[in-house]
Image (cartoon, rainbow, N blue to C red; front, side, top):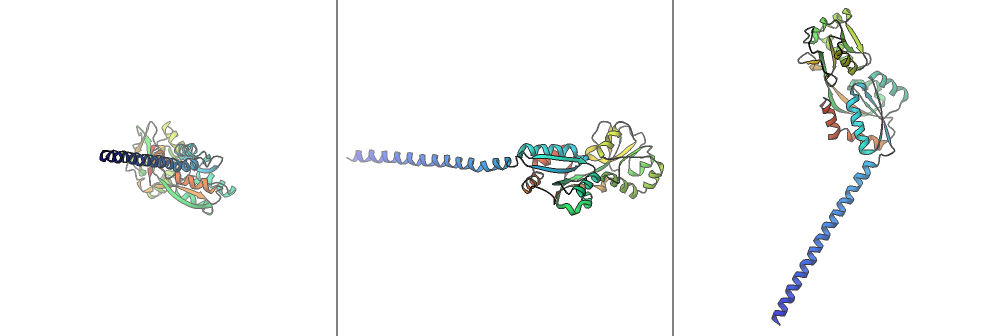
Length: 273
């Protein structure tokens, strides 16, 4: 009888262990099921912008990085990205005239002032660094802003319509050479920084002031300690008051702060704020 009781106790213990094990396994399975269920809303949220769209204005000098950022956002959310790349003056006129659009990605905070009535919020994204560049052989021996008086052809942005043009005028004025350079007739202007850099790379000038990210072309040299170090700006992302879809605007604002967006900016030579 004693042996029988011992066997029954052993069997009961094994059975209890089996029940507990099943309970644990069931609990694990349940947790996994709950985890998958909790992941589902994120996937749904990512697809929730299907059929929605954003209308964005962006400075033409930032075309390559911003187009890649927009494409990445579309791939993640399904949101259509309608982007107008132009110089600041053109964008400002369009916003003030049409009173339409969701975002303005400007070359500097100063470019938001003419459309301030339509700016809801603004967030700094990356540094916008102006640099003095010359052809690789630097035939005029230019080293600083003061040396720009040596140029037969100086390539600059249009100061009436581009941030980089305004900065160039300010830098030369502060260096005391603006009037001399102006009187020499050496200045040739363009409406975007990429066009300036392209022309210099083709041998169409002796020097230029452009954004750092536009200067990475074969045959060009960025001059260090040139006097441009004090004119760094920031690229702001401005949400416009005329934005049409709050959900899409919020999602893209958050995406602009993501590692994906930041990595794209830095890949193209920008420095994070």
